[in-house]
Image 1 (cartoon, rainbow over the protein chains, first blue to last red):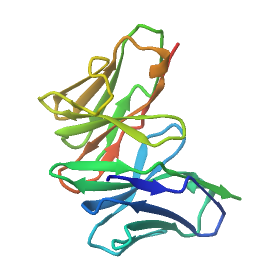
Image 2 (image 1 turned 45 degrees about the vertical axis):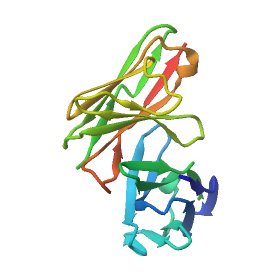
Image 3 (image 1 turned 180 degrees about the vertical axis):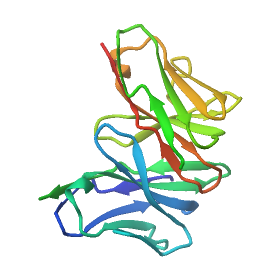
Length: 112
Length: 116
C-alpha cells in the first residue's frame, strides 16, 4: 500500500538537534522529500534525497535514508525558534505515472 | 526559481456563491498542477490533478461539478468552488512540478476559504 507515517509532535530546546522520523511502505519510491509549513502558509521544499542515496547534508539539515527499513529522517542541527513549524515527509512513487504521497506532518515546537 | 503564486490568500464568501482561486507558475511552465485541501491539523488531501489543455483528473470522493478546475495555459490553473457551503471552508493549496519524474512539487501559499 501507499502510506507515509510520521510522529505528530516533537519538542526540543533551542540550540539542541531535532530529529524527525518518517516511515513509508511503498518500495517504488523515486525521491523522498521534506517540506516545512509555517502557520497559514503553503509548503516550502526543504530538501530531498534520491532513493539510491543514503545521506544528504545541506547546511543545518541532514537527511538519512535507510531503504531496507523504509525509514527516512531529518536532522536539524542547532534548532532555532524560527524552525518551529510542521514538517511533512513525502515520497514520490513511480507507478506508471508519478504520484506524491504525504505524511500527516510532525509539529516541531522549539522552546527558548 | 520555481515560484508558485496563489491568489487570493484569503476569501470570505456567502453560502451559494462561487469562488475562484488562481494558481500561477511564475518562472517555469507547468504542464501539471495539483490541488490539495488541508483540514486543521491534518495532512494534505489531493483533490485533483490539473493537466494543461485537457480535463482534470479527480481523486475519489471529490465532486468534479463542485470543484471546477481549468488549466488553460502552461502557467495558470484555476479552481472554482461552485455553490459554496460552510463545509467547503478550508485551506486550499496548489502545487506544480518544474519537470517530470523526480522533480519536487513547489507549492503556492494557499487560500483560506471561509463560507458564511
